[in-house]
Length: 227
Image (cartoon, rainbow, N blue to C red; front, side, top):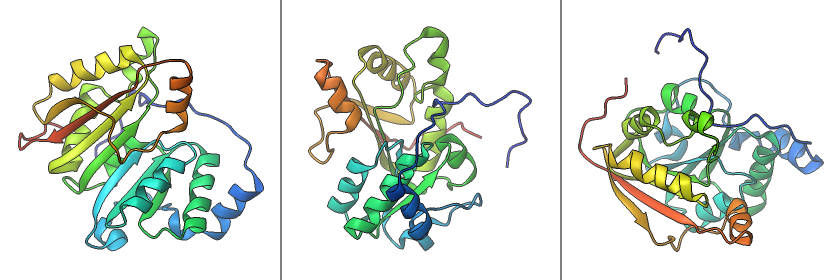
């Protein structure tokens, strides 16, 4: 494990507070087998068997995450978010819909990738409507930045994919610019995938007449530089 930096980590998310409903609290307490709480490295084959594993970074209330897991029972889904009410919502939904291929983590996706996910162990990553951090002084917090792009590349197997969607045009331009400089990924804008349900944040963007940009990048054989 790398030594602790003398500088604080740059977060890609805003800490949020929210009231926990009775349903969410009950789900967190009663259906905890679906909630991964260990800080140790994850042995994905023990969790998902032989299934290929997709990591979703940021899932909101988890409605679309559960829908994707239900539609792809032959894949394992690992979903991470920092918002406790959303985690409770998704845990409840997993139980209500009888899903067995979806597990949830509450925490920082970057820390998860750095310390708990083995190299080349994911078949894909999905980042739908991440915070665009529109102010220039906050651009360093964007999920799509060179050092984080390299980290993603180190954890996705050759031929795996990274799907991203945004309703913020300047962020779409940023994604294209950043990804074009990274030999570990090849791809670009695509039509909205038929398998991707409309998300809550996407609905808000559409209500404001924003253009939705979807991207898909495939992991190449080029070695990553992340340490």
